[in-house]
Length: 221
Ligand SMILES: C[S@@+](CC[C@H](N)C(=O)[O-])C[C@H]1O[C@@H](n2cnc3c(N)ncnc32)[C@H](O)[C@@H]1O
Image 1 (cartoon, helix red, strand yellow):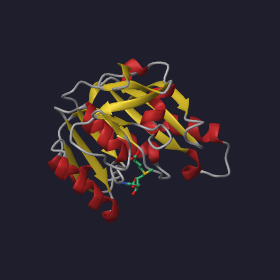
Image 2 (tube, helix red, strand yellow):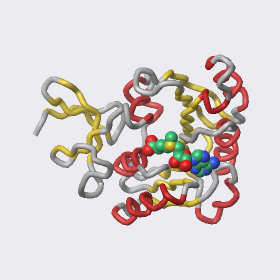
Image 3 (cartoon, helix red, strand yellow):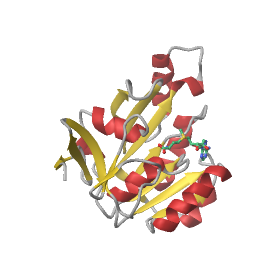
């Protein structure tokens, strides 16, 4: 067994692999999900593959991203479930409502949910949050990673409807999807202004892990 240390948030750890500290989560179901290495039951979580892992490595206030093991999470833009699977490890007694509108990605997500009872796949457009109201409850954490022109508006709509007050939302903002001609900083500033009833706590450039991506951490007020 490699040496283990607590990670930046509850439910994560740092494995010492030949002198390098690697972020990992304790697997909630057997096996590797997307080809990641599994060492003694811990799944390595690569910040180059997952923006949330990059945020956890870079954040100066990781405590605000702590999730309890029974937390309920709304995940918008789940894709095939790379990051969903690590959140599922962290909230092993909770639930991850994973919204994705690509039927192709949904096939993999359904396979993931078959192996993990706390993942609820939802085939829907995150810009129409009322469409999944019958499937959802109020949640403790909203995570959004989808490249759309109206990313801030989609986040605001979902948080207004489903995020409990005082709880945290993370928006992974891809500025080039919004405007390739404007400066990234100008796009970032204008998107932040569009966030409604959310107090911004941290804004981080995800380089060197992800180009043109910013993480916005905000609290619902
Ligand atoms: C960058 S990928 C997400 C990667 C994923 N978050 C991860 O780390 O494993 C963006 C995903 O958002 C989905 N998406 C984009 N717009 C969407 C929308 N309006 N509603 C639901 N899903 C959307 C895309 O189909 C794509 O699978």
